[in-house]
Image 1 (cartoon, rainbow, N blue to C red):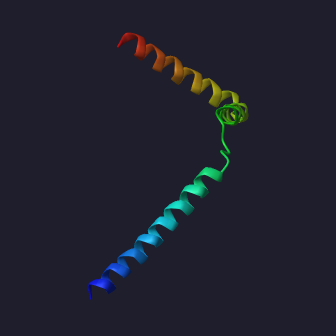
Image 2 (tube, rainbow, N blue to C red; image 1 turned 45 degrees about the vertical axis):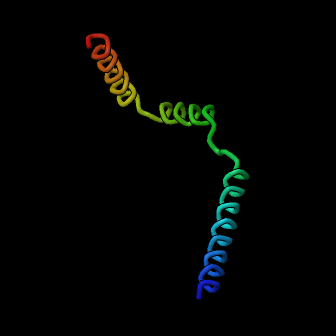
Image 3 (tube, rainbow, N blue to C red; image 1 turned 135 degrees about the vertical axis):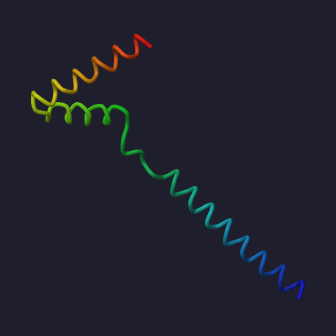
Length: 72
């Protein structure tokens, strides 16, 4: 009974180790698709796609937020 239990424990431990190593290898081999430069470029494309009215609304919101920061 004890031998069967320890064999089963070793089996599940081996499965856990293999799964952990596999996950670590997958994470290490994945290339980062988004760099900060790509993120900024996407943000600028988003801003360029805004209408003039939307862009002005965004600017006014930013001005208001900046004023609140300087006051508080």
